[in-house]
Picture 1 (cartoon, rainbow, N blue to C red):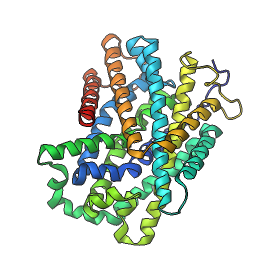
Picture 2 (cartoon, rainbow, N blue to C red):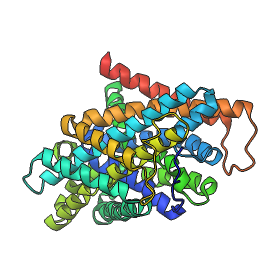
Picture 3 (cartoon, rainbow, N blue to C red):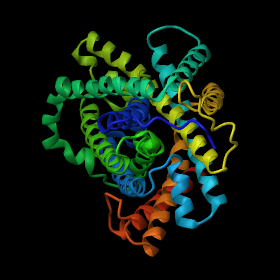
Picture 4 (cartoon, rainbow, N blue to C red):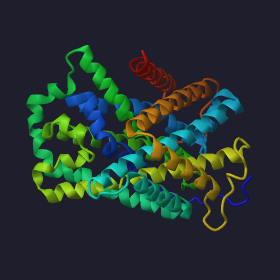
Length: 405
């Protein structure tokens, strides 16, 4: 058991900005081009499907975070649902793996963005980025979350700026909406589903918020609210901006660019395009959020003797798990150096969907045998968690069939 505990200092607004920073920063800027290549003009539909899938599971995370507000949330939920320490330990380590792989994904994407501006070794860029994020993550949770929140405001502001500057293109939606939302054959639908699977990565982040539970003020109330608010806002923003993107720029241009978001404003002057390119680099804050999350899961597991106790030790000065942070940072550096962007993103989405399936089924089992916790602030019908489990499994099987059969 750690002698020094985590510092409960995160307010609801900061938590929402943290969640938005992880979701918006990690996925949309990084993978817009890859999703355009898979789904083509139907990219907005792909994001709609991704958002719907994410929202279903988000309801389970919101309810469970109110019922069990602890670090290593997914592992705790599994323990409560299946009464198996070994199974919950496995889930906890799967969560850590997703954080590591996701941080590597964001780092590789950011390195690509930087190379659009300066000629520099990708390996050197990755080294600088990962070490920088590791240092900030170990600095202290208040400072780290503030850093993520500030960049989140900039990134979200940039997407709102796109809507403001290029929003005129939405006028064509009334006559072209069928081109964007009504696929006409099975081949097109396969592309949409592939794009939705990849786009699902752009929603990863809300589940990380549950692992900040022991650092959130009034956690049973604020954490569920923050999870659902982040999902809704992110989905709306993705659909609007991706619609503008496909109405403004060809999908071929989007898919071939290192900074696809910036391409949306190419016709509005070099200055606007360069600003968006610079903002794209700031998605690295998503890697920071993932490193923070993974280190907190290690801390939570160590508190339950499901991870080495020395890794979960909290530094008395920074009040952060420095050893866990250093370990996570080192592994992220290795993955980011040796693996390509799409492989990392698809791997993250696949593992996350497995975790979502388990968490949804855990809640379904819990609600089948227990009454509502008197302290719990939020509850959804039991069938919602079962539906979340089924949809997660269906998407996993579809992606496995498409990739391997």
